[in-house]
Length: 123
Image (cartoon, rainbow, N blue to C red; front, side, top):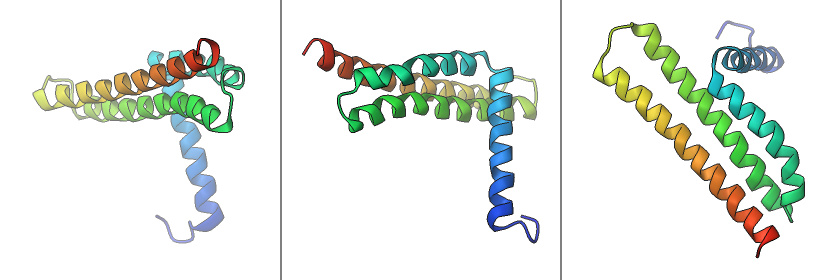
């Protein structure tokens, strides 16, 4: 960190870089765009499905978790691609593990939404 870049200035720079990262993910990653669209639909729907603040937090949190894991997966893939285009088993493993993390986040979100919607409308 540069001298003098602490406190508010550091926070402002960090926030700017964070938004830059979200913008890059949205621009270059189709999966991230699809998950954003899903969250734009589901997050307002959470007000209707949830019967308590805790349920609302679980529903919204599961959506945000998918986005977070997708961002981390995209970062791993970008670093691996930056290293070189040749195939390497560790590069493939890193990408596969990142993809598995996204899949598990999607399963968690699906379970959360499914169980809470079931309890709200069926149970």
